[in-house]
Length: 171
Image 1 (cartoon, one colour):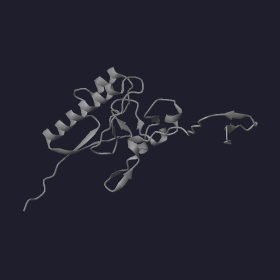
Image 2 (cartoon, rainbow, N blue to C red):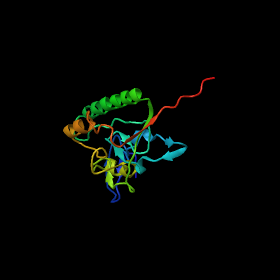
Image 3 (tube, one colour):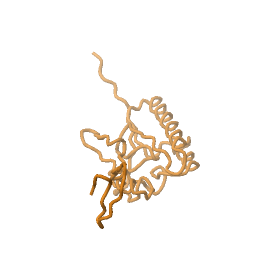
Image 4 (tube, rainbow, N blue to C red):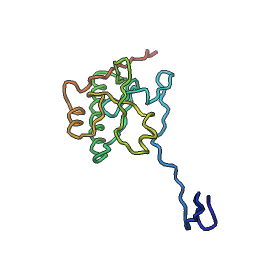
């Protein structure tokens, strides 16, 4: 309990303190707790699979920059931003208005999106997307692997479903 001079412990010992800072621990909140609604139905990130560490299955037209847990955050963010710019250019060139990562397996994988064992991660990890065993559904913590996965190539858009824009009738 708090006393005039500090804190009294269970055994009766009083610890004197000028300042006492209470803390319950940090809990991570993916996308700041953003509510995601697709076609009128809320989609919980925990029910999705991460696509290339930046998009989430079943959620169209959304990407997030999530950096490395073991290296410079900006290295991964730079790769993600370059990929998203190429993806937007590809969509524009082909007349697409919607892109959605599509997880085609019947069950969600069990692998957590983030591989850290810190308390602040473990307290919230069940609310995060899952990750698959292989690209493009694997979240790498490796710049070289990410350069390959997020770089140009024949499988650059594997796992994505595109939808063409529709033209509204003009009267």
